[in-house]
Length: 78
Image (cartoon, rainbow, N blue to C red; front, side, top):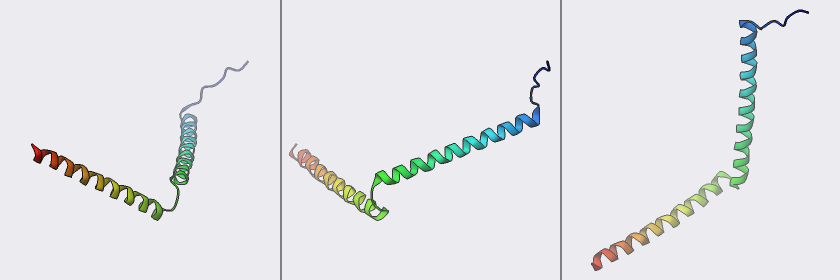
């Protein structure tokens, strides 16, 4: 029987490059899939999403102003 040979430097380098390439392809695929799913779940076009966010920010600004007025009124009572 012939004993198995251990791969040397060039073979290990090629094997590592192939492994690295496989990992890069898998990560890129999963990243693209995740991006695609996030875009689907966010709903609507960019303009629609921006309008929705602007409405939310406007509502939050109104709440902050209301709370600021309440705090000022309470401070003035003292």
